[in-house]
Length: 110
Length: 112
Image 1 (cartoon, helix red, strand yellow):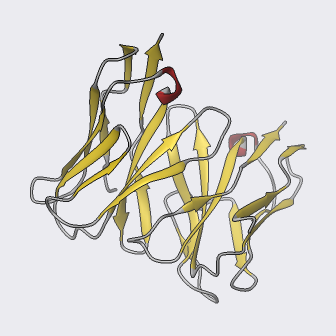
Image 2 (image 1 turned 45 degrees about the horizontal axis):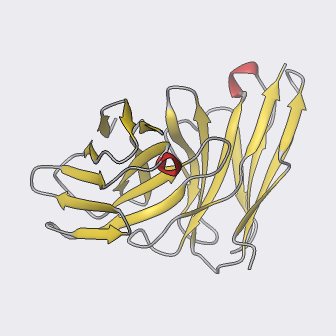
Image 3 (image 1 turned 180 degrees about the horizontal axis):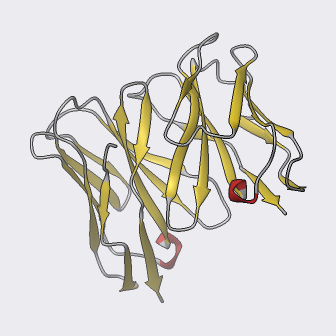
């Protein structure tokens, strides 16, 4: 069974702190890696689709990088705000489907 | 443009009852997916349909069947519900695996 790992499992930061999390995936047969933001009682919302080694994507205060050769992606949040509190999921594209990591649960304290 | 819609939003079943979860997308996407979300387990793929007319098993297909009725609709059927199928079910669609995957609002299912 394909293993996609995320660390840390959970994170508590103060408002204004910058933070980052890791997604680890198999380095062979890479096609795409997706990042999602998932708020409680809602459905996952796409943040980034990473496709090329060295990709760096940015949306406001959130950015992501990709290293397909070593099998990891980082998600960065600069100046965390309480509204950033959510679970952040990565999903590795495997064949025609996706394998999701367990997520990193972020809590931003005001 | 409603995106991905799911019905019902919430359902309570007794063990052994059957039901069908409906999913529809209006984005003309080729691929559709059914996931279940359980505490501590993240999202796990039940079945997917890479294109109209095809369906394939995911990680946890036992106890489920699917139908890709047309390009828009992808239904998930529980023939004989079990308490282990208590979960939140999400449908999703995507045009290409290198593009954005869109999720429906979810169906919360409780099997007693």
